Image (cartoon, rainbow, N blue to C red):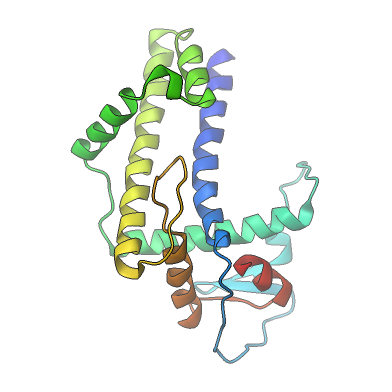
Length: 209
């Protein structure tokens, strides 16, 4: 039970990392302007992503789940669907996989962080890990290694977009130089090309706000 709870905690941490990236597109205040001819969608369809129709019910919480803000939940879910679709597409067209050497370099950086500068999350992970058996620690170590590969891949993705688009960056914990302006320029290109369309005007305005 203890191992399951700790793994769930780590999974949530990894999910937060990925969702944080998906939400980064909303941090630049530049409005997006579409010059495409408006398309009349089929009834109930609010967006189309790489040919996949997204309906309002696709953005609802799963059965049994509760949320205090359904509108925000749908907004975040749509952003995550768009981000994941185009990130996967980008990764099929560009080599972004982390090498063992790159992961080792990241491990060296993380292990060199002074105790006083470690986040509460990192301290909690270390505390919980010390209470696990050897088999449990091996399982957690594998998950941590996979997460660090994702972090390296994220850095390479950000670097590639920044080199292509430049523009605004912000500082944040997962990546010291996050190219939020490049995210927007990249996604605007996909929208202009017709690779995704948000038919619902309110949902589109919220996506780009």
